[in-house]
Length: 119
Image (cartoon, rainbow, N blue to C red; front, side):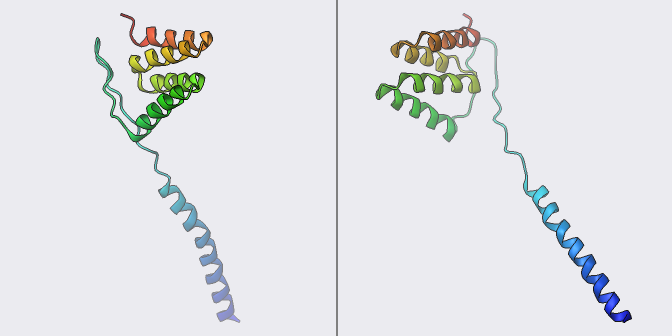
């Protein structure tokens, strides 16, 4: 009987620890993604590394504009300009919105362009 209690208590301890191990392992695996640093200097364009995501979004916007989908193209470019703080992308968003005759989107892009490049 004493041996059965030891086996049972050992089993309960192991089962209890087994439940903790995956939880601890899950905490260790959840490492936050690295954040892209944008270096700003007065009077200069932002120093942003051209990542695969940025290149993909630029190409997707340009291809959408070529296919006549100026609204999606402008919104993608405007979102990208806000993410990278690059006034050239805000200018391009303005051009795309103007080509699509979406004055509301063009106004948003123009505001972002002026905000990023006030000169």
